Image (cartoon, rainbow, N blue to C red):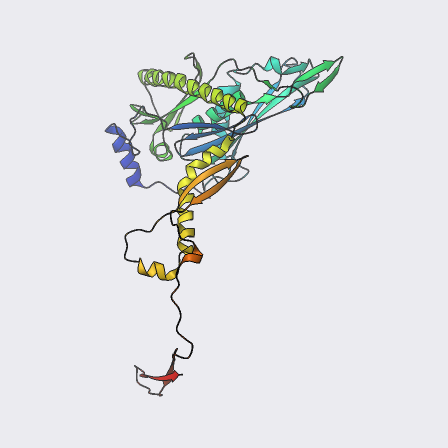
Length: 389
């Protein structure tokens, strides 16, 4: 399915707002959307929320034969999955041009910068080594997939723990997680990507563009930097976009300062995750369900409405609002349940129901329509009323 084309009015509105130093969502040109990082119960599971863009990464490992060219190193593979759940124009099982761009940039930023010590993944030279695989799943696309995917992949790699191994001669013994503590990966530095949307032939740039801004921009500038302000990757895309070196340096300064802040935020989230695991009160991705509390409350209101007696609703129809039960989320062993606390003291059994009149008093009226057979355009209808006692 093709993507819905962007109207001229929408594009001109975005461009005019950027020229005036404003954005549609109220941010400044150098301001990034709110970022939220959460980790799953399994090692190596990381979910990133960048505004409304949601990406999840999962790391796994297997023992394989190393490459002959690098016999003393392990292997790192990065795979990006984009389904129709993220956007209607994505095709299941096919990346497309945008998916290939995201996959290549994440590989260039993480794999080619050698942020992971691959030599530490070697078990036996030329025989066995660890193969690390990062699967990135795009859950919702609202712009700037590259930055969200890179942050999710890096967070998953930092959070991952591989099983410990020992050697008995030439025999490799892989210990279970309950036998020995798993071993984290050796991270040498923390590279992240920062994307800028270019407007007016590169004279104006906007950090962390949304999907609407990406489609309205002339091009895009992607910078990969680490916490040491070192440049790891650089890409300029767009049709006929010319950008001055002063603009590139200005974007690099903004991206470098922002990369330091994001790395510090990632380290704090990892430390908080480790502290929660030690306490034994870790909920994982269940904590993100709190964002859906408004929907759960709406559902509880509908349930309470249908449980209310009909005659009470008719009497209180002219009132401004009805009493809404209070709800809260209860997390128990990774399962989210909903508890409802009603302020109404009376139960259904205590409600006084109006007595119905005896059956002998009830009169039933039956209306029959009889066609008198007139051929005129408006056929009159005679109503005959019968009273049954």
